[in-house]
Length: 237
Image (cartoon, rainbow, N blue to C red; front, side):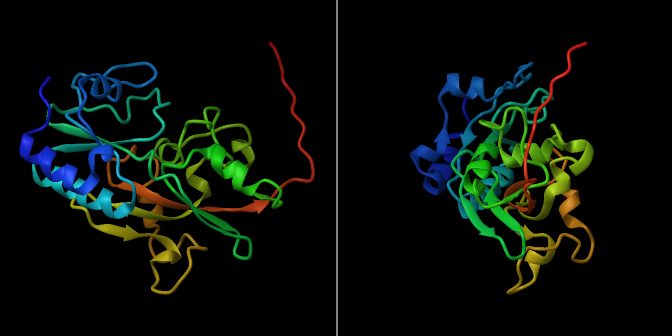
């Protein structure tokens, strides 16, 4: 299948650099499948931004040219949530946006870029006596925060602490036209993202949507005190 139009490739390369744009046919085939299924269409290109500004500009260029945009996390999905459903489409891979921006032990939150794997949060908080209520998925060595929030993931402990989306208290989201919005109390100029329900719950709109309403770029997760000890028990039926 042909790549995206040459002029779009040139414009995206100027924004993302050679490292941030993948057009190799084998790579495009790989990004057009998940654990269980392959898409009917093969993505025309894979966008790999290094920061939210690159993400915003690349999405704007793609959508203005009439391309559908499909965000992808760690690729561990089995729901077909990020597979292209249109011939004229591009995939966004946030793997390069994996930084932990802030750990705030006073207001009890951690802010990470959404390409961050769950295991990196575990390592960053080790020894600090805190953890997110939802502490990651079974595939958390590769699965990302953004992917988990998009899929409304659950794992051990969700019966007490809820889903991955329940842990979020604020987001930075890139909309289809490239606009960057903030949700929760982090949207207040000079404020901090410690509280989710600042006005309408815009944070909730962008969770469990598989990226259909906007691309989650940065997420702030609530922290709780770690339990004094942890034991594991397995049952076989």
